Image (cartoon, rainbow, N blue to C red; front, side):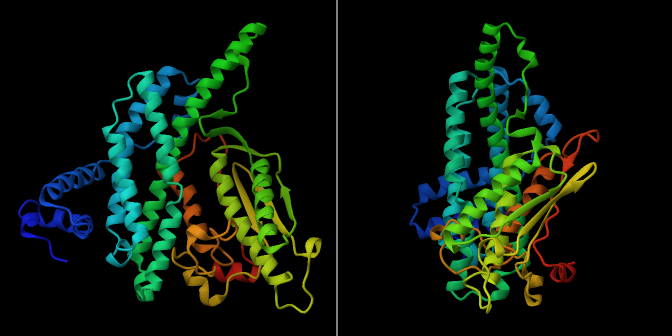
Length: 422
C-alpha cells in the first residue's frame, strides 16, 4: 500500500516507512483526516520514546533499593516506572510493527500491537505518582495492564497459525527477521513484567512490614531481627529444590489430567542449595520443560504409544533432575522421551516450529497451551530467554562475585539426541 500525499508531506521517508503498518490499520478502519493527524502525532510520540535508552539495573541494586521498602520507596519506584515503562513499551511496539507484513497483518498480532499502544498511552497520561493517592491509582493501573498482557504468547502463536492457514510460504514464516524481532520482543517483555512485578511486590512488602513491625513492637522485639527472604519479587535465598517440587507437582497434575498418566520424577544432587533468584521465573521455565518432557515420555511409552508393551504409572521411565555446581548452580533435566528427530534439530529453536496439534492457542488445554513437540520449541525458547532477559535487564550480571548465581542447564534429550544437538 502506498502512503497518501498528506502523509508523505508531513513525515520523512524513513518515518513514513516505520509508520506504514499503523497507517494501513487506520486506513482499513476508515479513519478521517482529523483522526489521522491525531494518530500520526501519537505514533510519532511512541517512536520517539522507542529511540530512548533503557535504564539498566542489576540484581544487587534492586535488592538494595527495595530492602525495607516504605512509602518513599514506593513513590520513587512509581515515578521511575512512569518514565521507564513507556520507553520499553515503545520498543516493543516498534518490534511488533517492524514484523514482516504477512505476520503483522494477522488479526492476532495487530490486536497485540494495539494493546501495547493502549498501555503506552495509559501510563503516559496518568497523573505523576508523587503522593500516596496517585501511587495507589498508578499501581492499580499496573495490575490491570499486567492482567491484560497475560495472553501475549497466545497472540503470537495464533499469528503463526493464521499465516499457516493463509498459505504463507514456510521460508517466510521461519524467516530470520521474524526470529530476531521476536527474540528482542520476548526479552523486553519479560523485562517489563519484572519491573512491574517488583513494584507491586514492594507494595506488598511495605504493607506486610507495617503489620510485622506492629506485632514485634507489641511483643517488645527488635523488628530489625525479623527474617527477610524476599525483596520485592527477588528471593535472596531461593531454595531451588522447593521451586522444582512445585513445578513437578503442577506438571504431573496437568499430564495426568490430559494423558491419564505421568512419569515419576526424582530430584538428586545438591538439594539444599540456595541462590538469589526470582522464583517465579525459575518455576515457569521448569514447569514448561517438565510438561513437555512428561508428555513426550507418556506418548512414547504409555498407553497411547504404538509399543507392543505399553507402560503405566510407576513403570514409565522416570524423569531425573540433577542440581549441581559450585559457585554457579546448574539444574539438569533428563528423560527418555525419545529425543529430537534429526530432521528437526535445525528448527527446534524456531518460534513457529511445533509438533503440537494445530489449534488456536487461546483454546488449547492447560497441558497443550504451551507445548510444541518433544522440546516445546516455541514456548521453551520464549521462556528460555527469560534468563537472557534477566541478565540484559539487570545490566549483564546477577550480583557480586561473593554470592552464588543461578544458571539453567537443561537437557530434554536422550544421550544420542543430545550429542546430535551439540
